[in-house]
Image (cartoon, rainbow, N blue to C red; front, side, top):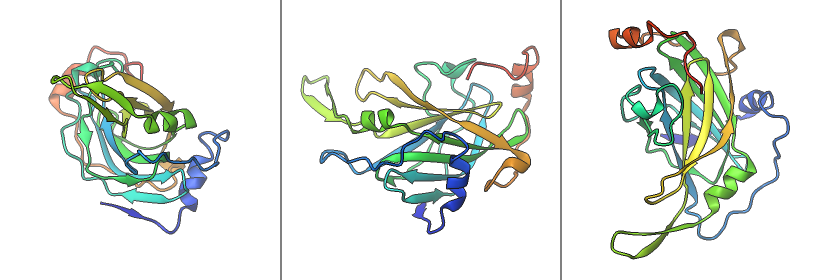
Length: 219
């Protein structure tokens, strides 16, 4: 469940290290915008990420935290083998609805293949927020034209602490639109994420990476 926090100075401390050019100017919301957004996690094929906590700030400066209860199984996406493919689907999803429009997203996650915890932070630029507010019209198979919004942000998490964000066009197009790239810290550099353990490397992962130079892939 996502809930508002009173104290948000810690996230701001993390975020200022990611992109000091990000504007704090409030962004107006169009009347048709549904008023909330969702997020899903994408990880590489056979290189699962295990997210367990996230904090997000919207464009009004309101902060929310979620102890992630994710649906799905990571590392099963063949469209994300070696790189993020255009058809890479969400491996892990949540029912969390976050009010407003996204500005900062920070996530704690465990890279199974590296046996390492990361704290990753990413800014959603104004261009991405604008795309989320743009209504897209497309035809149904019946010929009826409907409108929808890009109200789901997909976050790709990969070994080495790589994090990217993208949107998808609604309807049959489904085109992936990359909107941001973030950065990660680990170990003593983490500001709010705890270290975690307990996720072993399976035999299928060991077999997959045995002939690959690691870190593997272009994320």
